[in-house]
Image (tube, rainbow, N blue to C red):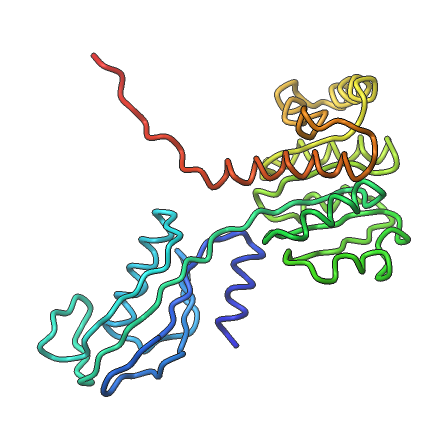
Length: 278
């Protein structure tokens, strides 16, 4: 169905939209109850009947997207030549009620390195409505048997098996992705850090490791021509400071809590700008 594919397209691209559904029809109407349409700021998929009814729904849907409104709304329109119209007359004689359901942008996380900690982190994050990318250069870490613990995931899970140059996946991630680097190989981590800070569309870049590792990485990244500001985009160590321990499950809980704080911050509206008093 076109509207299903449209939702998948918006979600994969981390773009907001609104799902419009005909929930009730009285009298004659161009579409039956259950008809659906998806609206984005720059596109519309499928139809709920065209004319004034559809134009009003598109207009309101785009207002909801622009205002980051997340509460569903109902809209009722009379299809009569006596009704006030903004976008042309529809005189079918009926009345149609539409439900406008926001399709917000969901968080996106890429875990580079699905070892002991990476898999535990994936298990926690998979219980949330997010786009979850799992990247590893070792095919043994991404087998169906090993990832079976994610079979009941709420998240949309994307597996990237890249035996050579896993850093190329960085350029394929949706805009606004949170990248977490925790591979088995420090050289691979370093290459991923370099690729990540050169990608301006990533939301955050987190690196697991010791202070000594980070000191070496900073020197190497600077030698490779990266500015201090670019290198500072990397957060290390990652996790919630109050959660300590070296067990994979404990580290994963700490990193997951840190990421959830970032997700909440993304949903929080920016404070209104106030002019300074003269």
